[in-house]
Amino acid sequence: MEVTAAAIVAAVQAYGRLNAQGQWIDRVEHVDLNKLFDRMTEAEMEAYAKERDLPGWFKLAVSATRCDSQDDRNAD
Image 1 (cartoon, helix red, strand yellow):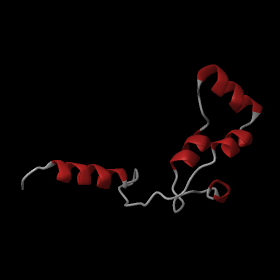
Image 2 (cartoon, one colour; image 1 turned 135 degrees about the vertical axis):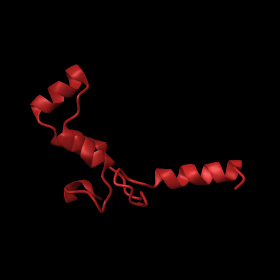
Image 3 (spheres, one colour; image 1 turned 90 degrees about the vertical axis):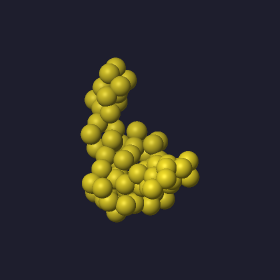
């Protein structure tokens, strides 16, 4: 098989559609970061301000797709 620029671009595009479990996904949703920050507790906001540490649920909400999100409030 000949490796061409088009083949490399196609491979990168395909790789970008795989989630952490290796499942093919189409990312069409968006995440409202303002809503997520509004949900943070005062302690979580302080940790983020001091240490740039986001809560685990925040990271999951940003990386989740509509089909694997466990919090429907984050899926628009």
